[in-house]
Length: 386
Image 1 (tube, one colour):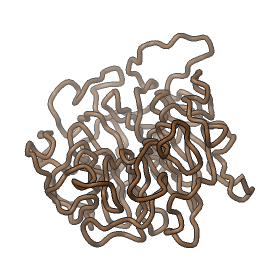
Image 2 (tube, helix red, strand yellow):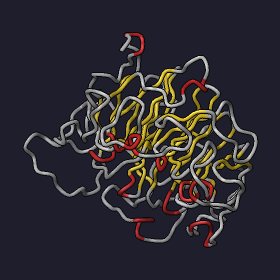
Image 3 (cartoon, one colour):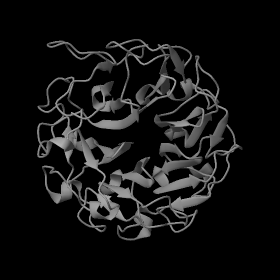
Image 4 (cartoon, helix red, strand yellow):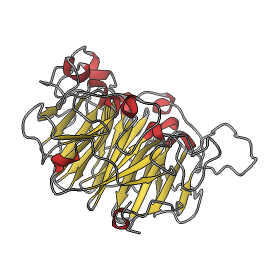
């Protein structure tokens, strides 16, 4: 591997690990909620002001740190979704509201605030300002007409421009809001940040219209179709979507302006019509993916959490995005080589540089935050070139 293609996550330990640490020889205990313990976290956001919020998915809550944590297992300062740090349950074992959550997943900066994909409530919650306290109520909801309903597609069989179904990912870019509406096998785009509850989206990708929700658009996989889209980012001006169900990452040149616009390249597969895990073989390679759940850009690099292979892959941007079709990754973290896939590298205890079904990645400045769900922890890395 050429030296200039290496990046810092290679061969480096996490600087901070959040969550309960397991010492060598220690027996695993039940994951009781606390201000330290997490259960299958799926996403994290470090705001520009230094506030960190984590989707503690299995405990149906958000955990917040006032400042970027500096030590392992540092307790959270705030909580949203439960009455305190020691309770759990979907919607706090009550009915949905402005401060409740049911399987929160993706989380992103949204203007001066943040947005959270509240997946099992089939909605996106938006805060106009980044919360700085416990149980700050959300200001806006998408996918539902109000904060108290939570049926998939508002109880109808068809999708619509104002409904969601198991929405997993959310991303805000240059005034636009994008949502990975996973259960409807599509990405929805609002051209401007919505201002009203339940506001309909303006554009759809992955389906021919706003009402369709068939897997791969009702046909065979192609350049426009999706199966389980989970995360979204922009790599420079190029839209990138993690299509985990098709074991690939889709890339568009620029931002699509028409419904069902086809992508120009995919990573993880050699063609637009093939979708098998690891390209149909058991062990991965430098160009294969198995259920990639998350994507994040940092300068010229695109990072992909290759979730079922328990590794992080990196691609450096070429002169032409089209040439990325089926390209080999140029960097790897979490495994010792491109042919390895075992959790924590040897099915052993977690290490400071290993992953077990890493679901989410977010990069702010020179800090990468990885939601290492299978290890019930969040890892913080420095990011820079080796």
